[in-house]
Picture 1: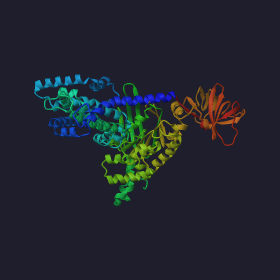
Picture 2: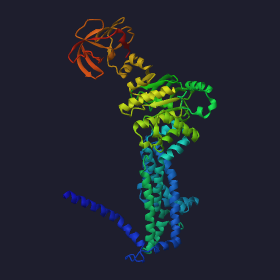
Picture 3: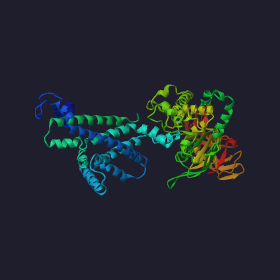
Length: 265
Length: 375
């Protein structure tokens, strides 16, 4: 009897935790469909705030910026991180501990420190050379820097999970170095690459702090727009943007998860 | 000629049959292997190969046998091109390939872990080598179909790699190497991951494939039984040095030194303390060999001994006491005490009296079965 009570208690705890995590999100989603502009009372279902979004040029431009930033930075980070991940795998038997730590450090560094450093760096370069005017360009560079470690880690762990003899089998079966990459390595790590791309994408879309410090006047992304708009009060429009972002990020994270689970398929 | 797996002949009917024999002979010649003074060192202290000279004849089933770390796998990897020798030359079919990278060698390997590509189907795995060499899809398809029939893969070709059992993977790995029709096939302990029954079944299968194709096989194993069953010739390696090369019977019955003798499973080795022509004195007593040779150790193979009940006087007769008997059905293994020495004997079970523990017996051995060797 006591065992049953305990089991019920633990089940209850599970649901409580889920509620704790998702209730605030649920409120935002709910109020994005509110017919009135009150943030306190729900008066009926309507899509008017989504309609208003479509007519708001500032929001559309922020959305476009977010997409350009996320896709460009993810593609470049994928290329660079893939090479680094392979390099880490190839040289895994050497004592490269501190180098590996250098690759991982950006993951644990506070965003604000990272953002301020990037900003200072870009300002100095700009003052000296006239290059790197704050804008989408600087934001792309900044995003790449925090995406690379994740891509490298995912690619590295995929390679580590492979039978090392496979590389030799490819050589033995007449594959030239280029053909080894095209016909063996890339197809083998494809699930890892897809997973890494979508993870990078979500990291970029989510990011506010680093974007904020490296953005220029014309390059506001959705999080930056929301932050600016919220100073005037939470409007139902913001709820609608937030809901769309939750949906997009959840989708990208889901794709990333599905492909990271595809082990030796 | 039906034994070749080539499809060239069927695709260009004009080329046969006159060209066939010459082509086959050319293949034979192309598949001899010559190694001269091969050295390999890992790091500062590990010597993997310390001067290996070896010639492998075309069409031979040749086995590299030795304990782990003896250099046999390193030697195989040098043949494949996966490892580079520090010193020495390597030629296949008279062509020096010491510096040729693996993807340009007409040599294929069956790996211990099979190394089948997980992202490809069985069919795509089989066609991989042909595809890398730029063969057209139609010809690849024909070659794969032919090898699948030859190795009797049946419907396995349409499976995914993760749907295969160990024995099936082994056969796919063999087919994936053979389909390329290499001059030489290398096999790195290909059966070691399989259980005993399947293992002996695949030993027979592998041997039949080799005999039918007449291809040069270089086989690595640490199992002397397997080496004896499979090989035309065996090279026993220890410490990066070849100890002995020869046909299985020669290596088993006339090992050149104590290492080879012990590795082939012999325990009955006795230092010769005095000699008078072919009359040898050991801790067992005095024995006469037919040709004693110069070795300082006497080898007595357990299966050459006979046990007579009681004490029987005679030449090469030694009085002994049975201290242990292991009955194995087809034969019985004995441990005998002769003075302070022990002797192993194996008796065939053909309805005769099998002495029991504690019995006094007389050990008898023929002079021609006694072999001497050096330490």
